Amino acid sequence: MPIVIFELPDGTQRKVTADAGTVLMQAAVSNGVDGIVAECGGNASCATCHVYVDERHGELVGPPNDVEDEMLDFTAAERRPTSRLSCQVQVSDALDGLVVHIPEEQV
Amino acid sequence: MSAPGAGSGVVVVGGGQAGFSVVQALRGAGYEGPVTVFTDEPRLPYQRPPLSKKAHTEPEGLGVDLVPETFYRERDIDLRLGEYVAAIDTAACAVTTGSGERVPYEHLVLATGARNRPLPVPGAELSGVHALRSLDDALAIGRALTTARDVVVVGGGFIGLELAQVARARGANVTVVELADRLLSRAVSPQLQEHLRQRHERDGIRIHTGTAVERIEGKGGQVCQVLTGQGPLPADLVVYGIGAAPRDELARDAGLAVDDGVVVDEQLRSVSDPRVFAVGDCARHPHPHADGLVRLESVQNAIDQGALVGRRIAGGAAGPYESLPWFWSDQGPVKLQIAGLRASTDEVRVVPGDTPERLAAYAFRDERLVAVETLNWPAEHLAARRLLQQDPPVSPADLAGATLGALARARRTKEVRA
Ligand SMILES: Cc1cc2nc3c(=O)[nH]c(=O)nc-3n(C[C@H](O)[C@H](O)[C@H](O)COP(=O)(O)OP(=O)(O)OC[C@H]3O[C@@H](n4cnc5c(N)ncnc54)[C@H](O)[C@@H]3O)c2cc1C
Ligand code: FES
Image (cartoon, rainbow over the protein chains, first blue to last red):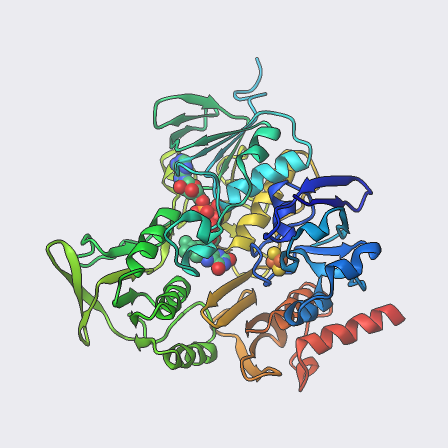
């Protein structure tokens, strides 16, 4: 099962096991990673699951979908080139070793 | 002698969205005392929104889980599933469970949620008539929907309309019966009520507003028809969602102030006892965007109130409760989102979106934007949430011909330049 690393704004890292076929947000929430609020439970409604994919992995994860792309313009923390909503990122074995950074603010 | 309850930690009554948020924030903010959660449902805390947006016969299909059991174990949270709190003794700072156990507390958090108002008509007890609040309710409805042909939904509120779309998508004949003259009568602006009605009717859902359900009739104990002010409707499944009432009886019996919810101050503490907090659906609280006290039933409210109280008890920074209210409801193809609090006297302006499926309604009070309702337009909803929390307030003139999205982008650019 792929291992994903969430890096908090203070630089600490949380290494968690994600299940292929679920979404990245779920891996953070099930493991109690702080800073992924996910108010809407993965419904692409709230943008409180914002992450910055590490630049090295930007291409691996790919670009946001259309609705997500629009939403990312209004996240609490600034948008960056590799911003994604983690509830819209499907986990697959290819993501093993992925590093994502958690922004300062979500709400 | 130390104060009653000193050192005995936090007791949370209710393991729903708000209770979960309390304990998550407590441990997240480094609270090290004992934490105990009593919840009368025999399962791990879960989220309710999927219950009315999907139909399944197995829990896995609904995807309601918040966190696995290990989350609580690793954080030393004593989760007492299937255990009911029967009484609070505020003088001694202790609760008594249904089985008679006495558990002391230093801080008590009431997160007891709400219960559905019962359907007050003859026949409501027939098999095939369901309320919808718990996972078990949803699974029972999911099972019934595998064979139901004629579904009657009583109540044209959020839950009723969501479920009507779910049933319709399964190919059932669906009729929504609503007593008021409009759908979602107090929840959204009149302009949107009409729009939503047309959307649902276009999908083949029949809607009878201004119509009372008089009785429900059955054959051999199983529902077969619903008698309404406009005549009988055949039914093999009836689901009702006619509002909820806060579960505030524990607080009332303990002598705490209640008024359709546990009355709390801006710190979410009971106005009668500073050691007791109330959060989520069961709390009636002041809010900077409301005249007087409000009680809100939403995931945002449950999460943000729970988090605030958890942080406060842990000794972290926590000002008054003033999170911007927001809400969503997925009604089949329609994603409705609301930001802010609207009053019936607000002036509402409806603006079409950039695609035919999209729409926004902007509500103004005293020349300032106070609430925004959107259909299928999450970006505009998010822009509303940003702008409603910023100064200066948005005036009708700011919005002449523009969307909030455009305005938010323009303001951001200005900030960056400044
Ligand atoms: C079908 C449905 C769909 C919804 N959809 C949406 C939506 O799309 N968007 C949205 O924002 N909101 C939605 N909501 C509302 C949202 O789910 C609630 O506002 C939220 O769950 C409130 O959280 P809470 O913790 O206050 O209450 P609850 O989640 O109801 O939890 C309270 C818990 O406390 C337990 N309890 C009560 N009294 C006691 C006692 N004495 N002892 C022990 N345990 C006790 C209850 O059994 C319950 O498990 C929906 C609600 C329902 C029912
Ligand atoms: S969890 Fe709400 S948008 Fe991702």
